[in-house]
Amino acid sequence: MTRTVITQAIIYLRLSDLRQEDLNEDGTGRTFGDRERRLRELADRWGWQVVKVVVENDVDPRTGKARPASAFKRRKVTLPDGSTVMRVIRPGYRGILRDLKSGVASGLLAEDLDRVLRDPRDLEDLIDVAEAKKINVRSLTGSLTLTDGGTDAEITLARAMVAFANKSSRDTSRRVSLGRERKAIAGEHGGGIRPFGFEQDGVTPLEVESDFLAYASTRVLQLNKKTRKPWTLASLAAEARDAGVLTSTGLPMTAEALRQLLLRRRNMGVLVYNGEEVGKLPGEPIVDPEVFRAVVRLLTDPSRRCNPQGPAPRWLGSGIYGCGIHLDGTTCNVGIGDRSPRYKCKASSHLTRNAAHLDALVQATLLQRIARDRGLVEQFVFEADKVPVVDLGALRAEADAIRIELDGLAEDRIRGQITRSQMLRGTELGLLRLEAIDQQIRDAAAVESPLVQFIEVRDVAKLWNSQPLSVKRFVLDTLMAVTIMPVGRTGHAFDPTGVELRFKSPGELPVAA
Image (cartoon, rainbow, N blue to C red; front, side, top):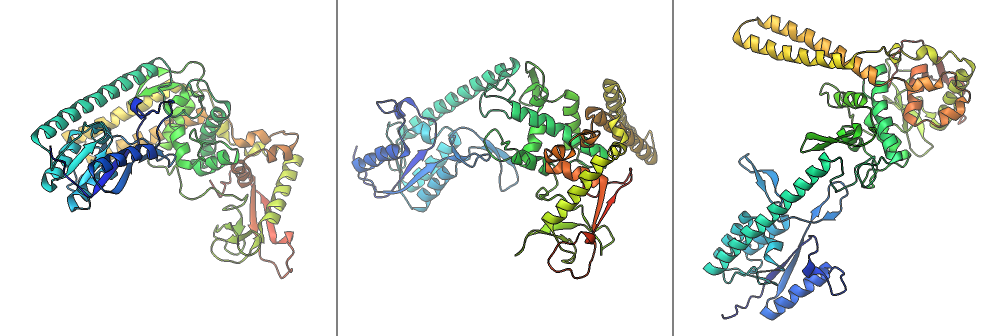
């Protein structure tokens, strides 16, 4: 065969697991530099000029790091016509096809056929471009060869080998899937990233992380009972960051990451495979099943804004301290300008106060009152904390029955057996009862308010200093009303008389959730 001289060629390298032929004699893996060098030597033997080197890899969305790119795994994509199909996503490979089609290059060099192609559709796209532009393709192993667009024998061989490579990938995928299913049923970790809250075996609880999961699950429900609003996940995520609790991949905790962790059924000792419960972990679960179910109901309820946008507060009184000029409930936030951090009215720049001095005054006044008046906190521990004994199984059964009845109302309306007003009235009553049942179950899952620990405490200051900012803000917001008042000119010194401190009466709702 006469060798065709090509002056422009592209080298294609795909980030993938090292195979036996990728190992040096000493057992170490070859780097991309080593692999590229071998392909450049092949280009020299053929007299080809390399104009581009394409290294295909994927990016892990959780870590931002490169990870092996697959020539087999497919994902759902939406085509221009709006239809959804499964495709292998490889921008680097698609870019090569565009370059070959546009004339940027007229040759392709790769290590092996299965490093480039494991999906028949990808091969046919390459054949189409090769035949149209008379492209030449070579590989180090000789498994992928197309000469001047490809001969019949070369194209047939390529199709056969891609079919076998595709089958091999499917076999491997099936074996791995079955292995993970067996492990899940047996209560073992199926491999991959270490699940948060557990050791690498996926079974043994990791104390710091498991304690935080249990704590966060309870906190979400505790404060919701008081305000009828969910506790912000941003605040709980900030607590995790302050405590040095990272995700299992070593990243700082975020509100969305925490939400996903709290919704994971492994927390209550249940193992899931393909969305179905297939096994249980040995030992006691990290989160009580009733607490977990209450958290799921809360965080998945579409009528609640469970994950408000914006950063968690970083100051004791942000959004809590009131403005003494705007008497409509306008509060103050901390601004940092040329001077030290200062509380400022949200609506204007008046009534600025030194943030550190104001927080110190409020904190000292609050702690002195708690220490002096032992009954102060107790009267604010709301009745929902005194949870009666309830039959949770009966409540869940009643809720299921109501949902069935609601479905039946819709069917009766379609058949004309009831009027529209009857359907709406029945639906309204059913939803109200469901909300009441949901609240009973949620209240039963979380027994105590953060206020309870301040009842009859001996060292108030020590307990206060050990609390995260979100708990301090909750205690302050429940017990005190702080208003920044206008004062005359006093120079640059902080004037305590310009702050109105009032202890609330039981039953007053806090300003901030």
